[in-house]
Figure: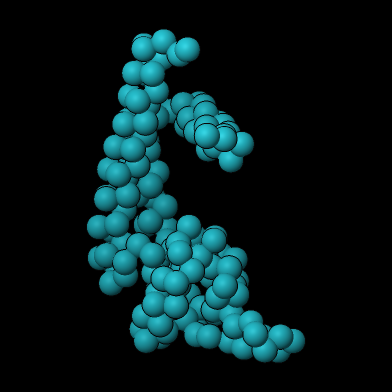
Length: 149
């Protein structure tokens, strides 16, 4: 049986991680919205900018979004002229999302400021502390897939 102190520490860790995540996401979301995008639209654009064309069916898994929501987000980005749908030449069932020149321009102009904001937010930690945090949080995240309950 786990002792009460360990359980309370686990709850505290969960609360601290959740609050830190919420605070970072809120600050970054405000910054993204200043570009006329919502965070999900930005994630799709950023994915296409850095990784190239992506099958619509796979975008949700890469940015942690339900597949049903991808169509809505892609429609919005397409209406803004930031992405386009491209049919796969070898498989009619597959459609790719492709970033347009306007989308590339938006991201290339905005991304340096975005990554600087993330750096500024996390600059309270030293490089060693960041590395430790990355290792520990990754360890926690990866262990969950093997967790059975």
